[in-house]
Length: 252
Image (tube, rainbow, N blue to C red; front, side, top):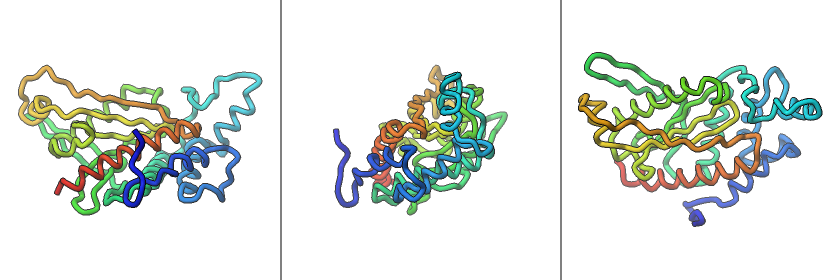
């Protein structure tokens, strides 16, 4: 089913532009509104001044161990690089839809209080309503590949979603009764959807016995080194933005 197009809905040229600007032959002066996002994403694939694609070209004859999807990619020098790159790209994509939602750099804080303990979690950004300040999506960023110590990443993301669930309500699970978490791990994006469940919510708040667990449905990776994958990510993400926009109009 095609996405809605027209004033106030969706700029259908966005994903096409997105796939074009990630091609290596494009120069820094090209790419229009996505130019800044592209330059920042290039930095997530550049360590010590050396770009991933240059490593690939230099080692193509001898070895294929340094491909972009390899677990051998070194960490980005600073996580702030990936954080800025993610927020700028997500916000630029959101501008394809006329909406009162915006991606913010704010580290949203959730406090999870239980009977005998508590913990605090912070996100790396969020999709927030400009009018109500309600959160419609959260962002978690890592400077390393997801394949490096994935269990730690899964645990952190689960804690963030659980904390968000404890401080929000069922009405914020706007994606077909799911919450949305966006992740960028080095140069790869992931989308995670976690369902709202009343029994699990009661367990978190009251310690009520249940056999229900928090289930995280993750799709990806969408590599920023691959133009086709970025176009696919752009279409999915804009569709999610349209869903959030519709829900935000009825949440006050």
